[in-house]
Length: 393
Image (cartoon, rainbow, N blue to C red; front, top):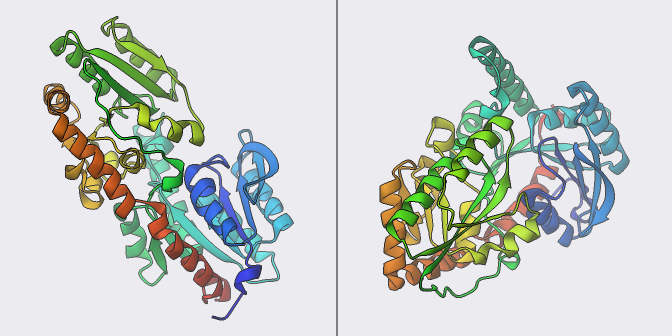
């Protein structure tokens, strides 16, 4: 292999959308590279942090009040301190910052664009009126295409999000690196269904679009059918808008008062993974709009690793990439009656419940785990560093 020797390869993760302790960047990709002996830096504009952790250097800043131009300047200044050979960028803005850093460097720099989100997505267009939304979409779309053209290689988190890039850049190297968790973070406890009690949970952004209203409707339906069932509901999440808060809190006020709700708020990675086994059945009933339909939920693989059944919205991306039928069900998110019936089936059929629990963990151990794909990820990064790319043209 030619190019930068492996032992000297310096790698920086650059993100404007994720905190430095992001599960994919910090706990999986970054930690794996650090454990292999690579110097690793994480640069995030989400919080002001300057420290070392788990063999990685975290040089981060709070870019909340900065313009895009100011963020790009700060990213390039921070990268110069570490002087990396490879940049793994998570957003178009960071790819552009990487390009400017590379332009001023005296050595060959490789830029890898790690694509896990639609861009532009619904959240990029939130609050825009019809015409402004259209104009903003076009501007952001061209910005993304321009940024993508500056990258030397792509990492794709899922199939459908890869399709536009593989069409536009058919000869650009890429790898699929899905959101599988490292099983060392997730404890598997043998399922022991408790008679008369059911523990459910909701996690993530709390909004109608992410399925919270559908979730609460199911809780209501369960309490109406199973009068003597003790239902415990843990909500681990956050509101992004006041409108979401007002709407969802209104639904919560109308739920049966006998249901025990535990409000956790947003948790760190260790807290989240450490409490997964405290749920009996995982539900995710997000709306099946065009964007959600083509998105693969990260949490699905964590639920499988915890060894618990799932009931998820019937999304095209899930059907494409996950064997959910072996450890759960895909449903129409608004079909409360059907979902209540499926949960009741788990309550009344312990053999089905235990079989799905064991099959979920088995799939995680044999297929859906980071250990199976981490070596290919490392190899791809090393090869990208030695490959002739945009920087040589």
